[in-house]
Length: 407
Image (cartoon, rainbow, N blue to C red; front, side, top):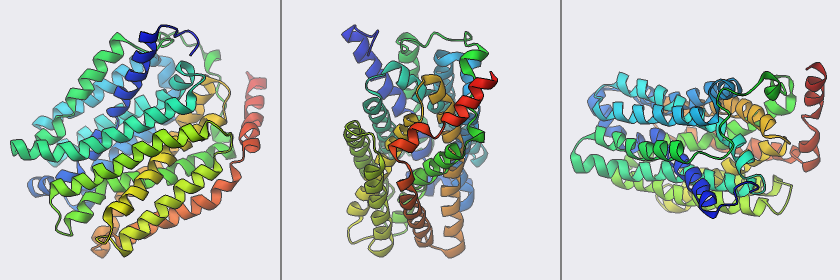
C-alpha cells in the first residue's frame, strides 16, 4: 500500500472502508419491511411508496454526474464528511417524521449523501489501495450489501420493540454518527486535497463523447437494477403470501448474506485474471435463475431463489466497479469515468423499483416485474462478451488522447 507502512494505519483504513460502506444502504432497505405500517399511517399508494426507494437512487445518479466538480470544490475529506452528515440528518428527521412528505424529503437528503460518497469511493480506493484494488472494492461492496441486509432485518425488530415504525428508520443515525467521527479522525491518507485541486489535475476524459462509457453506464444500470427492486419489494412480495413483517424482512437479510459472500469472493477470484467476462456471465446467470424461481416456485424454495439472486447481485456490483476501473490508468480518470457510469447507471436503477410498483398496481401481482428483470439480465449476459481485456484497455484511449491534445 505504498505510504501506509504503519500496521495500525493500514487496519484503520480497512476498518474505515467497511464502516463507510455499511451506511450506504440502510436509507433504502429499512423502508421495505415496514411498508405495511408506513402505508397504513401515511396513506401512501404502492406507486408513491416506490419513490422512497427510487428517489435516493435518482439522487445517486444526478450527484454522481457532477462528482468530479464536487470533488474539486469540496475535496475528498470534506466530500465524504458532508455525505455522512446528510445521511445522519435524514435518519434523525425520519425518527421524528410522521408524514409521507417527510419520508420523501429524507429520501432525497439521504440519497444525495449516499451519492456523494459513492462517487468518491472508487478513486479513493484506487489511490489508497493501489495494489489491492479488486480486494478493496470487494470489501467495500460487501460492507455496502451487509448494511442493506442488517437494515432490513433490524429495522422491523426495533420498530416492533418500540411499537413505533419511525424508530426502525431512525436507528440508523447511530452508525452514521460513528462513521462520521471515524472519518474525521482517521481519513484516508492523501485526502487532504480539499480545495487544492487545479483544473489541470481534472482535465476530463469526456465520457459523454465515448460510446464505451455510455455502454458501461447502461450495463452498470441493468446488471444492478434488480437490487433496488428486491430492496423495495421482496419483503412486500412475501407479505402478500401471509408472511410476517419480520419474516419477510429476514429473507431480504438472508439475500444479503450471499451478496456479501459474492462481493468478497468474486473480486478475489477476479484478481487472478484480467478477463471479467466469465465471472460476470456466472453472476448474471445466477440472477436469471433466481428471478424465474420467484415466479414459478416462490414458496417451494424461497431461500434458494433469494440466495441465487443475492449472489448474482453482490458479484455484479463488485465486478462492474472493477470493470470500470479496468478502463482507467489514473485515479483522476477513474473518478471521472466512475462518476459518469454510476450517474447514468443509478438513474437506470431508479426506474426499477418504480417500474415494479407500477406493474404491481397495474396487474395486482409482482410476477410481470420479475419477468422484466429476467429479460434485462439475459440481455446483459449477451452484451458481456464485448468487454474483453484488449477492448477495455484501448476503448477510452482515443477520447483521452483527443482531450490531452486539446488541454
